[in-house]
Length: 452
Image (cartoon, rainbow, N blue to C red; front, top):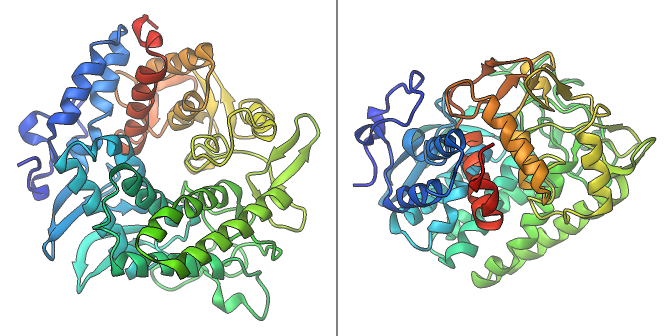
């Protein structure tokens, strides 16, 4: 069997290495062979060990793979939080996608995650995180912070699996129902916050039913002008937005709604395809009209958030989707002038969430409080979206200096003290580092042949 009973999951917080083979939740020979092959070409001992631990971390410690109602079922915890986020789970398994067409167990893992996310969205399309328990084909909600990128992650997973395998088996009536629910939510959230429509819109309350004090205007967040963009109250960090239209999440939604067209055609989901493409066009027009603003130093840039009335939030957050990740998500090319201007701002002191210290510099986030902690996730994304060998090497050097002897990635790290970090077990960023090394190995293998 490639996987163990998930009830046997141990606390890996004390490990500075991979768990022993008998303690790994999901074991796969293809991934092990890949680790061995790529590691053999990495000269730097630290980078080699970081890769060999980080790439399989999701499989080793977070994948609960079994069956539900006679079908594969994959529940992926984030690491030190025992719940599954729609966004995180997709990103955690994404580096394994190229192997789904070559290995039956990896293929089943993705089918199981598609089935699980389908059940999640059919249970509550506004929820961002879910518990493992299933009752009457409904999944218990862990957290109901609506984030547009959670639905975009479901679109990305669906497209990615179909594109890699051409297997149509997961895309049944339940999947189509979840897709239509997601599209309905995105369309509804295009409405502005006024007397006529506000009761239709999402607003955030606590488990007790009280309105959350951090989200303004009785949990609805600030209003936005009707402009084609789709609103959300929370960012990919699970922090509340400042303005209702989060540009990176809207951009990611555009990309994957368009990419799903061949799949819709294959399963004859013509009406769903029409809705999806119409939404994508409306949102894309909104981004181009309202999401690009003029900056006093860098010229035309992408704003992080806007309200359609002329207000904008100029920054970037490390969590993906981000402005830095737009080429990675295929929204624009790396050499797009607006993106390049935005990138220069993001990686400078003009970004209010950028810090430089004794051991590192990089993007910070309000998610962890005072902005003296850079996020390795953003540094990895900086390298993933760069063709500059020097920049990539500098990013790897920063990551090497800041693993604090664990050889894993962390959520955030003090720019002056690498041993002061948050989240010892955060599988998403570990997977992203593995993805980076795989890309470098394929595109610029000479980088890995040097000591950093």
